[in-house]
Image (cartoon, rainbow, N blue to C red; front, side):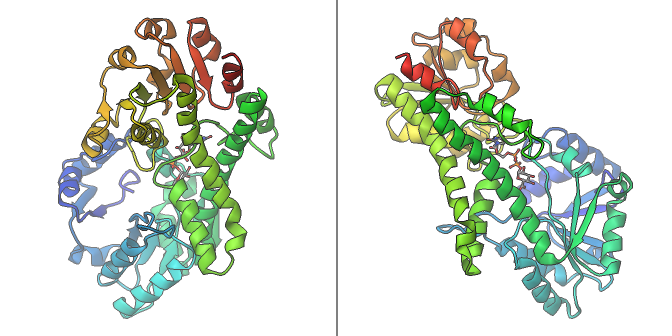
Length: 424
Ligand code: UGA
């Protein structure tokens, strides 16, 4: 918003994050975002407060961007933060301003929020649901150049404020799809569920390919050329993780059950199960290859749930690391950006800063996050550091022939697994 030239106030109750933001520093890694934050803070366009003050009364638009994590012990989304942020905001809203919800919420949340906020405010709060589709790793660009704006609910005044706020995006001709609150909430969960389903579909094909000798990467290329299918989100490997897909499909299942139509989303349970089986597949392959992983040293390349991020939430890489650890393996893990976070949050895992050090200790290597620097690894050079050259490519980014020619046994998930197992 500050990039668009607006005057923005960010509300951040966490003291240490607040301090960082005020200094123009990000408490996490996201390419380009710290530069943008620092520029906005310096320009005075962006300031931060720990809570609302009188200045909130002058704002034309209020964005609700808090998280909706998975609830402890259930599939449901925890919407507490949305309701508490909304109730607090309602005390400071002026009747001609608009509240704009960005958080991913179960269908029906926004209508209830509008009711509760209106009670607190003493007038009918103008609430628009405007889901966010940015991806970590490309967040800034996705936010500044979205492929659509979804606008759920709102009065003509609220919608016109929203369009002013997004003026550069509107001017660029970005499609704006107006709808009711419920549909806007569903657009987000449906989009994430569809994308997660695509990934699990190709990973289900990988299960077939791994026992039949077929190549899922080629398969994805061929079916992806059909425009009706499309080539994106058909990358096979150890599956999806992060703070969005896993919890969003579970929250959707949970909400459908609450609404009495649980059967409609039964397939998402399979999407989740296929995804989780991919992580176990890595462990099974290592057990088979090494006899047992107990007391073996396994070097994992990557900890973040995807490259260009240091986000460790529901990371497939970490999940594999913990499974191996539980079986008695000695796990070493490297990540260009998330290493420090792993060291702090999971001291039981050994973080390695130097790739050569990791290779020289390992009985087997697992590529779990496709950072560019891992794609550049020279199999000849790294091979000289290892006694037994075994690698599992969990993201299908290594050149199988090149690694094989350098004397490696390479299990590329969904591709060369059957060949390697057959060759044993
Ligand atoms: C996802 C959606 O793509 C965004 O549109 C959405 O706004 C966001 O969730 C959200 O709900 O906030 P994100 O989780 O940041 O974005 O990242 P993705 O690029 O979607 O990747 C998610 C996971 O799927 C990663 O672990 C990635 O490695 C995996 N993935 C992705 C695959 O395994 N195969 C693919 O072909 C694509």
